[in-house]
Length: 123
Image 1: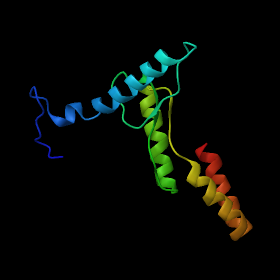
Image 2 (image 1 turned 45 degrees about the vertical axis):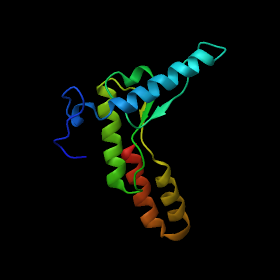
Image 3 (image 1 turned 180 degrees about the vertical axis):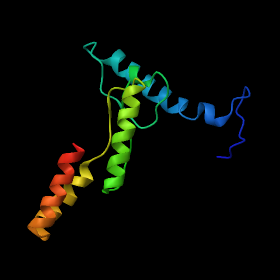
């Protein structure tokens, strides 16, 4: 969207971009609680969050590539959101599992030990 887009009421798009996503998971949570038999908090997962989203859902950073750079960025995003109050947050690390499995069957023991050392340092 253009940076100079103005919404109804004079709001700039960059100020309200993620409010729509937050309202979706808010109403989803409220609907699941209203129709549920037990008043437990449902598990709702979102990628689009805004201030106050932590009351209604968990946050996922979205898809990433199976590279070390993407893993480092994902960890930084989750930690930053935790500091900001979004404590139930996570990033996708599943693709790294396939990289590791592939390495077990196709590389030398020396390279495998280097990779496993790097994984240990990251965790």
